[in-house]
Length: 372
Image 1 (cartoon, helix red, strand yellow):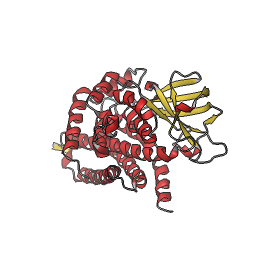
Image 2 (cartoon, one colour):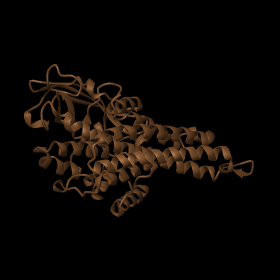
Image 3 (spheres, one colour):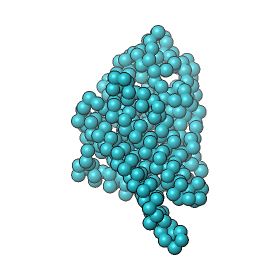
Image 4 (cartoon, rainbow, N blue to C red):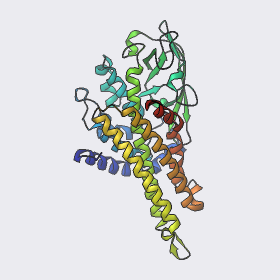
């Protein structure tokens, strides 16, 4: 649960790069003047040149073998700088799904995804909340029909990995297939959505889209056998991003408390505020311990990754939400103004809470995995 020397070097490299190239101010610019892709393509290319797209892939696919702990370090820095990239959608989920399927797409598609010439977006959600068991999009007689909502980084994707029900009368996560659908395919309509946190999503309609057998990723009707485990890993990666955002909030708040004066003393000397900060620090450390445990469990190929993923997401949600609320309050009247970055972290925390399952979803899932 401690970064090794190579992972620490990766962590510091990404931190220094993002601090110079993509500070929080860059998100403001993207929010105020959004581009069609939803992210800075030149920044993404520079991150790819640093090797972030190859961190967790196997060596035969051009991977570096830094492991998921190394990826977690990168995601933490992305969270600390509120950087908008397709890292989670295209690499952590997309490339990992293609690699896990272990079919001809691995050699054909992965090199282009890793190089950034193609960006993948995972299309699973259909309602207001994450619920893959409620998938209604269908694949019948080679035709894909249905709608997908809140597709992360959908506006900038060149291809979509679509979860659809391909086995008649199947229920839950049974009978699902994963389909690779190029963006320019006839019958695909993409509507861009810019969320409150400055990031981008898409609402996608598939109207009788023709699909051939070569577009199916992995085994037909059994996609959830590998999609489920990859989403557990992605949930841990997202939790690491949330952990980074919460850590940055605490550091900014402590700096403000040690600078702001009231009644001719630093307000950081007030015992009540010290107690609140101590509680926040303890909550952050608890969340970190579970997130790191989950990431290290992936690297060690342990069997409890699913439970740890749900556990980590719940703690990350509670921590990030509490940290953002307290940071706004302890910054006083300034905390609710747009000119202070604290509000940007608060908005990002609320969006992250919903991606790949909110607190209610993961609490219930954790209970089920524990046999309750």
